[in-house]
Length: 119
Length: 177
Image (cartoon, rainbow over all chains, first blue to last red; front, side, top):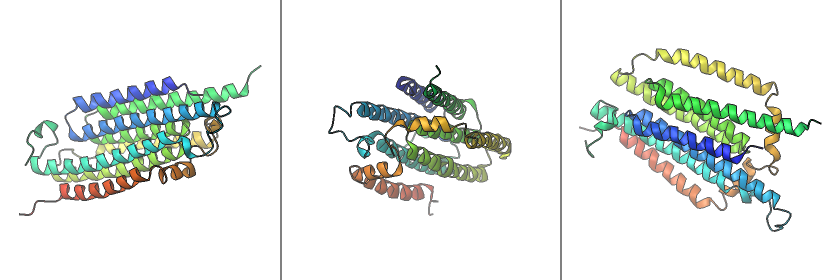
């Protein structure tokens, strides 16, 4: 049995790594990678809490007769994690498109060159 | 008396800590420890594979498969495409020579991982991760959940995919003069 707090602590650590990268790095591509790391950490936390919740409900299933454990009623966290994965992919696709446009117009991938709203 | 289930559980924990270490280290490399964007992209892929393994350990098998599909294939291909177009245009990333040595090591790691998995070292831990209800986190359960009570978010995401596809084309398009 994996202890829940270890998984959540790892998720928090991974999120902090991504957040530090997103704040400190100036390259747009590395910024996008850092945001992906943060999304991954969020997904791990969601899945871990979902499993914890499912085990909790399974243990209480004898008393809570209404709770049907075998079916798909306990997968909200995983469904949400799937949505987060898709959103992370969309963000990366759009971000790389913006990176190509930025390089084409500014000849640079430095985020600090993005100081004007139009070009 | 040695309890056999005790060993099984501890091997699951061991697998989690190993995967967590790989994920965290490669995320650190991807985020801060290299100036080379190609190396960073490879490290992100390795980190994502570790995250997929953690998903499987947490009995989210379908999500683990999705993680590999999405990150280790499409995101990686997307990233390499962007990098190659950038390198062709500006030449500021230089030759992709570091790609070769990194790819070699990624191949070694992947082959070792595959060998470890196929020599049934992972089987007890995977069996232990199936203590949750039958089919939990599989295609049928998650799919029926997604297409019944999560139908509206799924449709919204489909719309968002379309918008992002169009937006990506617009953003990359050359200005007409």
